[in-house]
Image (cartoon, rainbow, N blue to C red; front, side, top):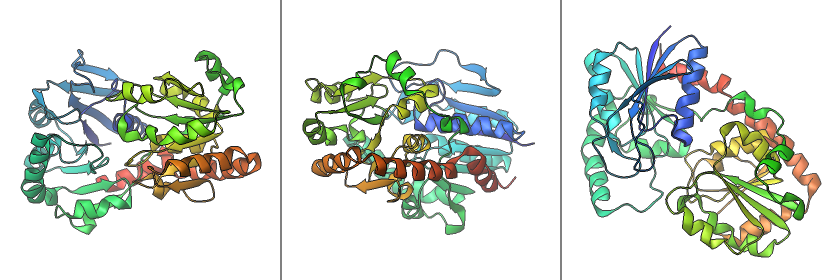
Amino acid sequence: MAKIIQVSTFFHPVHGGVEQQALELSLELIKQGHEVEVICSDSTRSKDRVEQKEEEYKGIKITRCKTWFSLSQFYKFFPKLFFELMKRKFDIVHVHGFRKYEVYAALLAAKLKRKRIVVTTHNPFVTTTRGVFLQLWVNIHDLTFGKMFTRFLNKIICLTSQEIPFVEKFGARPEKIVVIPNGVPDDIFKEGKPKEFVEKYDIPSEEFENTVVWLGRLHPVKGLENLQTAVSQLKNTLFLLMGPDDIGAEDIKNLYKDKTNVFFTGPIDHKEVPNAMKSGDVFVYPSAHEAFGLTLVEAMAQGLPCIVTNKGGPGEIVNDTFGIVQDPEDEWAWMLNIKKLIKDRKLRQVMGSAAKEAAKKYLWENVVEQILDSYEL
């Protein structure tokens, strides 16, 4: 049994793809018999703080360090992390994130203790416009700390092969880089109950011939504005947009405020995802960029054909047996591709079966073994 510390900027109960992965990985490692602790900031994605600084959740000990200041919504400075790591005995420290304070604090602690450090990049690409100060900091980082210290990391986990050239720019040797996808729990394969979901959220599905679903944070990077032509042209199709508000959410909602075939559910519980996905006929993912595409795999697990962005991970996950990959900004293509699938039920069934089979590759029982190999315990 090994003692593994997971380090993340945010953690449960904060919602997000990285946070969900850190949580599920921790639970899987515990199932494997390892001791797992999480150290994170006390920040949320808003200005709020998580009040409880220490707790245990499903066997995971969680320590939240005070955030001194923020460089952006995702970059938090919490110096106590280094001292917390120095107080603990551990075999591996696994940091979730790249170009962050956490990486260097954990790297220093790991080297002083002569222990291994593994970093998962979790989308190192720029997907939003940075302010002048933050962009200056990033440029300085890349030329100094990035090139000086990345080579000392024991292993860097990229979610897709597209990330490898980016990481190599920082001097990481090829043998230290490995591609391991995100994992999903087996409960997302349980047959969803769409009626239960539709009734709970009072969704007007019966008023439309078909339903197109999307799940994520309401944020400009998710590309929901790219669906405007499809929404306008396919009036008999319901566009079911599910997930919590984020920066820019009101602007997104205003785009569709007069469209009767667009329905926003707001945040949903992760346990409801199978029901949510099963309530649709087609899943869409029009993001400007996605590091991986966790909700895409969740849709595949429920047998949905998928139309996805060609920017980032989704293009590596989807093939033409169960999906369509396209330019996220091509609104007309979104409309035509959605129309093609909603008009052909038999095609959807064939593609849906292929999607469900392809999703099995990402089960945690398969992914966790690859991560343990990267730990070299």
